[in-house]
Length: 393
Image 1 (tube, rainbow, N blue to C red):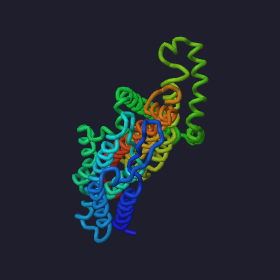
Image 2: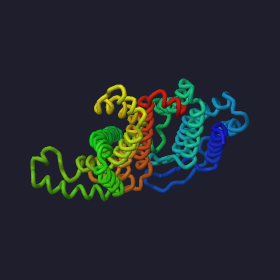
Image 3: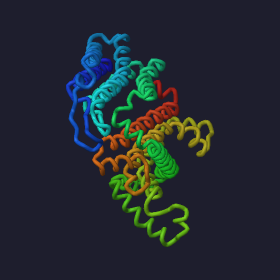
Image 4: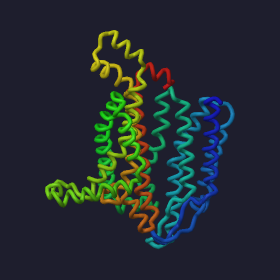
């Protein structure tokens, strides 16, 4: 099956999801932030004219998904997906304002399944169109950033102010910013430390067959331990050490908080980086090594000028995996007092407040996606041009 036909089907699937979203509730009206709510469909949410506009746009996307894959149709799909991001949220915001006017001041209008499915469908269309304009970086950039830019502009203009999720953010803004920074610092610090430990371990595994088996076995075993169990295993010895040596407590090293979280996150980051370092160095072409030896390179020169440049993309891929994994694992670290965006998730679970859960969960997803895109850019820059041409990148 050709790439174009696959994209056709994916785009048609995304457009169909967009149309299906119109049959689901778009908003849930609650008497307060904790009460059970009533689902409201799209026409009742924002009125018939706006509902017809959304329906027409999704129908246009479905039409553009079939037939000849001309550039105009591909561009229509990408731009339509980009427009649907702010249009979906703006439609929900208009509906929220309309629904809240006759209600009491404590009433909330929360985003429902229809909005989330419509946003997912828009993302599918954008991603599909970006793939088909792989050799056109300017068009890819427009398709990537047009939708988020319009969403940001609307957000700065206060368009989404009546949506319950935005109201939760307004009530927790200062705490949200501090916890986001803490989440990023925990992730970045643990992955940096893990990288500094894992790469030498991977090199040692390549250089010594005797060392390879225990290194791979231990890092693999750590990865199988559930997150809460690993935090629990670290808390007990750290607590004992902090009580035995008061100087450690003065330095901030305690049984709970950031210290056990960083240790656990470092341990979790080891396996992907060790494995990719090991595989990357083992897979270096013997012909390239022979060519280097023929040029009179020493063992150290071979490592710095041949082995590591060729293995760097795969090592960076391991760091990417560890970084994305750390974003999710850091969420659990909030249970042991480390802070981060998990604070809002667990607080929302305790209060049965779904919008508070989303206030923590959505930034975690966005942060993971942003790190993934950033690391893929780095991997691409580390990949030699000849290898990129062979891979069609």
